[in-house]
Length: 233
Image 1 (tube, rainbow, N blue to C red):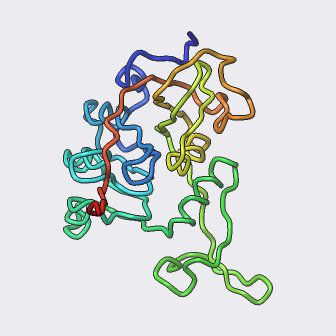
Image 2: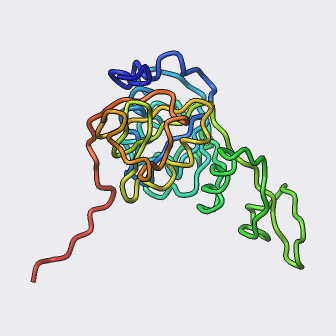
């Protein structure tokens, strides 16, 4: 196995964590979240974290665990509606929030990973989102400048990966994970299935291994955020 492969989440994050660092955490709701790596961050006890993630998990699971222990100082997010503790900490002034339209957040991360420091978008013009930001006119339309995002550490979750870090995501997990893997100064991945190099068809790779420095094979609870069913006829 490659030197990139670690036995567990704690060892995979060893030497990478420190107080007041910026962490990107992949996933959408509870789908595709790196739950083992999040749990290892909780165990480490690091504090003052700025976390870039679409949302903050739910109360007691995912990033919600780091809110419970007050290890997160600031969230850069687009949706926080499923976490009551998030709302409480924000409204009480305990937690900073940089709120983004969801597409803007995705593009800020993608731009950061592509080496693009800033870009212009119409989304948010004329709203609180644009306050304090540069506005510019293109072809008679007003655009707001948004900065690309990078992180000291990106933690991502994939369905399958080989021992060199080539990753495949499955369905909804292929949202923020691929772009975050590119935008971390160091990227650590957890996968459901770890396979040997050569097993994955190169045409099927979503994240090339060059972007991944460490990875683990994990077991995953895969909770359902909101179970919606209908009565049988």
